[in-house]
Image 1 (tube, helix red, strand yellow):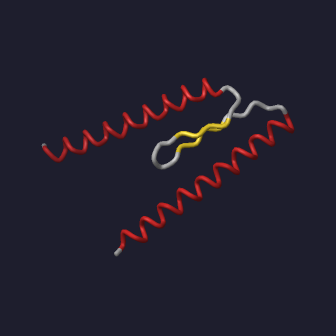
Image 2: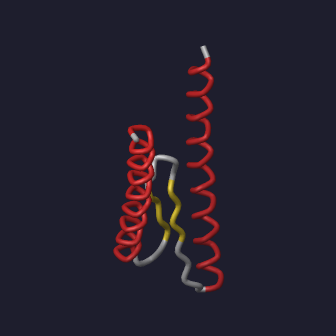
Length: 88
């Protein structure tokens, strides 16, 4: 019974994230056009999917991968610690 509502909320959060991300990137682009400022935005979804808005995409893609790997490493390490504490 409860899983249906939870799934709907999860889907709604992803839709909200997508819309707000697009709006944020649009504002960053407008600020760049108006001022010529160099702006970089990196946003991660709940599934650790990385999205970026910047001119130098190669640099940012490397940075996104590095951050994702660090986050995944920490999550895996926490899971190992948790499982280890259960087995001890």
